[in-house]
Image 1 (tube, rainbow, N blue to C red):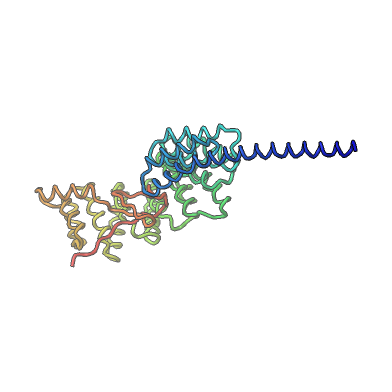
Image 2: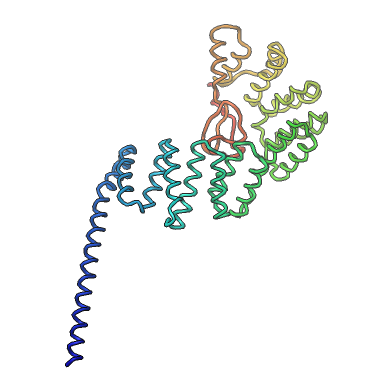
Length: 381
C-alpha cells in the first residue's frame, strides 16, 4: 500500500514538472515568435527597398532589424557592405570592427568580417591599413585568394614591384597557375626602376629575364631597346626593335620618341628602320607618332619633310585633325584641333573596354597587363 502511494506521488510530481516545463517552453516560444514577428516587417520592407533601388530607406529598415536581434551577424555584414557601397567607409569599418569584437561570432563569419574590413580600408583609400588587414586574413588562411589578389593590386598601385612579384608567386602556387606574362611585366617594371637609378647592368639582366619568361611582353622589348641605346649598342637596339615589331607591331609608335632621344642612333639606324616598317605596312598611327615626335624634337620643318618623304596622306578624320594640329597654319581650326588632340582617347583595353589618352601597360580599370591597344578609326570613304 505504501509503495502504491509513493509511486502515485512520484507520478504526480513528474506530471507537474512536465506541465511546468511545457508552460515555460510555450512562453519562450511565444517570446521567440514575438521577436521573429517583430523582425519580419522591417526585414521585408528593407528587401523591398533594395529591390526598388532605394538603398537609403533600406538601410533604415535593416538597422532596425539588427537592433532587434543583434546576434544576426549576417545582417550586420550586409549593412557594412551597403555603407561601403554608398561611400560611408567609416560606418562600414565600425560595423565590421564591432562584429570582430564579438567573442561568439562563428568562425566562418569571423573570416568574412576580417575580409570585409580589409575591403573597407581599401575602398576608402587607406591602403596601408588595408594591407595590414589583408595580412591578418592571410595569417588565418594563407591561401585566401581574394586577400592575395587585393594585396597584389595594392602593391602594384604603390609601384612596389618586388613585393608584388612575391605575391604573384604565392597566387600561382595557390591557384596552380603560371602567370608568365604577368611576371614578365613586373620584372620589366623592376628593370625600369633600376634604369632610373642608373643601374644599367641590373636593368639589362632583369629585362632579359622578363623576355625569357614571356617573349610576347612588348614592354620588355621596348625597354631593352632603350637600354641598348643608352649603352651605345645600336646593333643590339635594332635587334630589340625587330623583336618588338615581331611580338607586337601595334606598339611601334611608342618606339619613336625613344629613338629620337638618341639622335645619332636615330640618324644612323632608327630612321631607316621606321621607314622600312612604314613601307611594309602603311600604319597611320605609326606615321602620326613619327611626325609628332619629330616635330617635338626637330621642329615643324623636319616634320613637314618627313610627311612628304613618306608620302603620308591621312585617311581618317582623327589623322586629319592630328596633322592639322601639328602642321596647320595658326588659325582657329588649328587651335581647336590641338585642343581636341590633347583630350583624344587613343588607347582602349581589350579586356574591359576602358579608354585612355595615354598608353598604360596595366589597365587602371581591370588591372590586366598588356591589354591596351591603339584605337583605330574607319577610313574616310
